[in-house]
Length: 445
Image 1 (cartoon, rainbow, N blue to C red):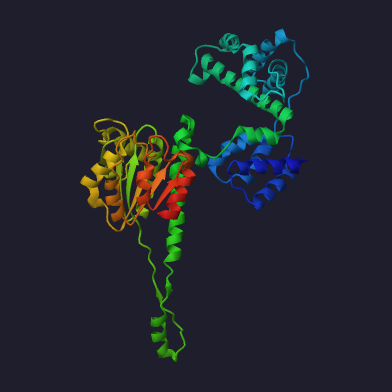
Image 2 (cartoon, rainbow, N blue to C red; image 1 turned 30 degrees about the vertical axis):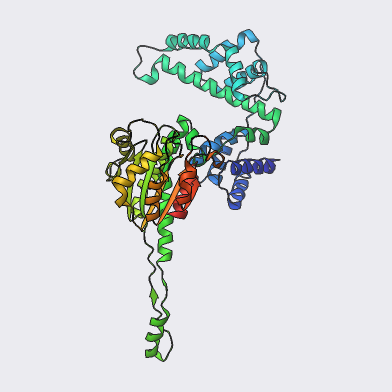
């Protein structure tokens, strides 16, 4: 039974994008054989150490652990409905969290109404339980109890009754959430609940539709991602720099040793680091995607022979200097948002005007050794595409790639002008997530 649960847990982690090899699963199974299985904290720590290699995977691990290794509540010492709120208040005041778990189990049993026939989320059941317990009234009673127990004035914010009440109510809400999840798992099964959670790694979040919390997580991981990608590119360069056998030079040298090639000569194959020109649409709809593209290329700039960056909405401006130097990338990107002259007459995306202005002002930035990267959804608000200007500099470039953050099924619909530009692109790439952006940089640049 335990091994079956572990394998289902591993399958759910892999389905969410967590990379797990057979050796990690074997280590996890071995760890479970040597620890106290009744201690959930120990089980959680053992599985985290053996299965999780990346910090960004921990959030998913913890959510799924609560699904597959849910803690069952004991309904001993049952309390009447009228007294349940008071009992929970007393448990919070005394910080008796074992008793709190028992009481919350009773509350969820009575008020949540968890049923396998009702396809609703845990938020609904948690809300029903919290409403029945009347958390506003409970907060008032907690504050009164904490104020009575406190001797003298608070010496720090941690001793303040209001802070204490907030922390203990937060603990109550988390306990309710865990208990509701446990009941849903009992009703529907762990595998089914794991599928409905729709969990995925930050790298697989669709940037254009990311929540504020997801965007914060993406900002946190993009620099470590760039470091990992840099190391991978450097290893690839070293492998290529080993060189090929220079057959003619080796034969000539072997004449001095009777034709025996004792000292082979190799010819260094030093790959030319690419020269990149980035044009990024920073209008509202795709601003987040442009931001992460700029940030990743900025972090990898030392792997490029040269990087020139341009931002646009319906006007284009070079932002290379704003992004250059050793300044913090967050400050640099704020500088782009505040200082770059990207708004023209209309203030809405106009790809045609942008490409005309770029060709006229910055066309000399494109040479046969330049790789051009366009970052945007090509939604031009029905303005003239002016594709001749795009074609003019795209044909001068070594290669032109268009990164589109929209699903491919949306291309060339509505006000999308992509079809006017794609014939002059080396490739148009769907790039909705940080993982896809990483893959493009690794494979192409």
